[in-house]
Image (cartoon, helix red, strand yellow):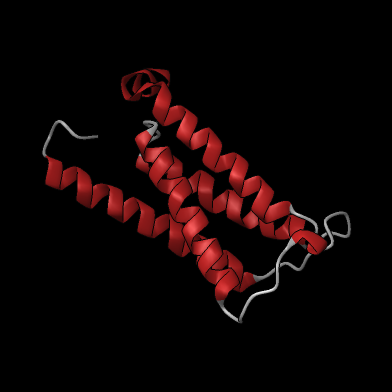
Length: 122
């Protein structure tokens, strides 16, 4: 993975690292820090967050299969951790589904943009 990351540059790696940090803050914030919202908005947040993670992972040069596998696993682990007493939030299969949909959408968007840009795009 080191060679593809060098090829994609420091900015892309920093963007991915920032997306990971944002995800940690969003997924593991204490319940008192989570703002109230209309029903369903949390699913959009999950979808958008994992879409961002997938896009920045690909930009950073992480392969499609690796990004998909690691992000889907991260989504599952985050839901399990949210269900533990230490975090005090609720685990949700629906949130995990929104996460997976975000990963798939991000990977599909990356693939479509890469195809449109031609063979030089990664």
